Image (cartoon, rainbow over all chains, first blue to last red; front, side):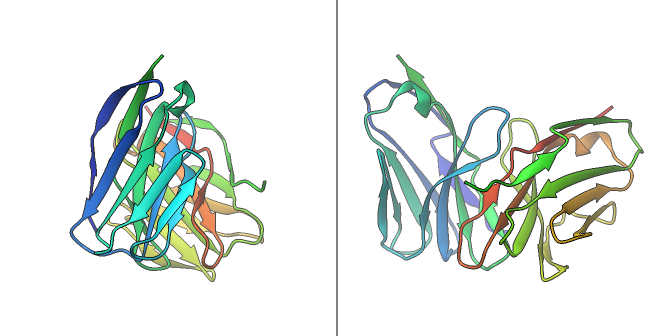
Length: 110
Length: 112
């Protein structure tokens, strides 16, 4: 299956700082998605991107679908304590399968 | 907002036993999935199901696994003879045409 490289693996940030993470792939995707997972829960969709070059915001979150269709980034502005969690990128090529990155663990220092 | 619901939230079973994990996808969704997540690792695709048949499966989804949609609302994952390495969180997910995947909160399977 497609391999997604997500970085950084983890980050410690100060409350109020901006956060940036990205995903790259050796193969193209038609859709990029970003999910957040809190402990003991399932992944929750944050942002979905459907077109190469698309830049989409959801509150303090901004994500972009790379023009090559092989990468995407997620930015969180002005982080707050509830931003703590694991963020996963996911790429979808066809109707049936979503491939996940390994996740970025975000810890916010108050 | 409609949700994908999974039961039980935690299942403990002995090695070699059969388990059935249950899911109720969002009601107007057409595509159904099972994923698993071993503790501390990424979410891995197991199988997708559309139009009452498996549309794609991963190498993890071997003969010990099966899925079924026995009625109009439930979607189940059966593991025939559990192994220690089957211990993981199992997530059900669903989506409608042209919509992103929505996940349930998972079933934690512990095989002892």
